[in-house]
Length: 409
Image (cartoon, rainbow, N blue to C red; front, side, top):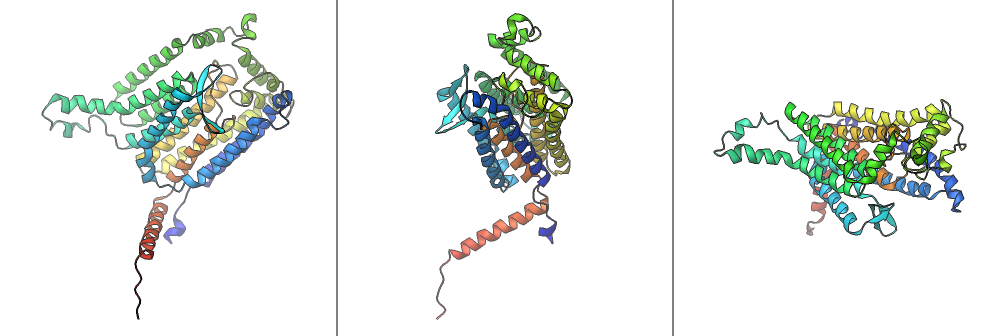
């Protein structure tokens, strides 16, 4: 009876993720074939083929990772972020440079973007750390027993800063790759998770202020970023149209010309002009050819994933599950909204893909890892208990099979 009533996973979450991933495949093919034909690479663009392979690997990983228990994910969290840091360090030493940005790591025939994996690693790490954290006032009874100021105040304060320092280090390493878009997503997602944990009002004011100053400093650090932000409000002036503003204005034109119903599948002009037509600016082709309805379709499915995650948060019975799934929901929401604002020229281009839709195997794989872990977090306590009993029975059987069998003769 327990096995029958136990809820194992969330099919709604899986099918929403699969739906938007397949929609992404269709639009990558539509947006990429024009440039593929122009360079003589055939009808099927390379990003489309790579995305199919990435989706196959992602779904395979989903069915493997959803079987890893919540306790194991919690124990793995510090190792996961350490592994992500290791990949970022390798990018610094032996990364591949494209368009003056060193963001990729080539492993044989496969090229990965480690910063994408830092997103899920950071969410998992913060969920594990913040789940057991108490507010500063709640720890006073224990701290007042200490005899020195250092042990009662200074050391506990420094210990509470460690998660924030680790996240800031990750953000700094990603920003150093000239990827301020991904760095911003990691930063804002982490900030929402910190706000979900016990924190004083003073900390909630000071921390965003410091992070805001740091983000402004990151923009001012690189002249090309300053130029991009300064030029954005003057992007339609003649001297900028074919320079810094080229992709932004053509994306803006495409989204405006699509109207409500769009110009029709395959008839868009933006995909013939924009270099990043299958990745950062794929929403330009979607809005141009399918109009507002196409844009709302993508936003609706992605929004459905976020809403489903928040529904699962309400049902979750412990802080670790709540923090992880809410962190993933914020990550996807922040990334989707930022990409759309970038595509319609509300903000300058900062290189953020649309979740599940834009071409990019690393981004897709990282998102599906997050979906797999969230699926496991949605398991009911009864399902977790049944799974433990089955695992224990298997271990007992293996031990029994290894025992020496004596003859009864």
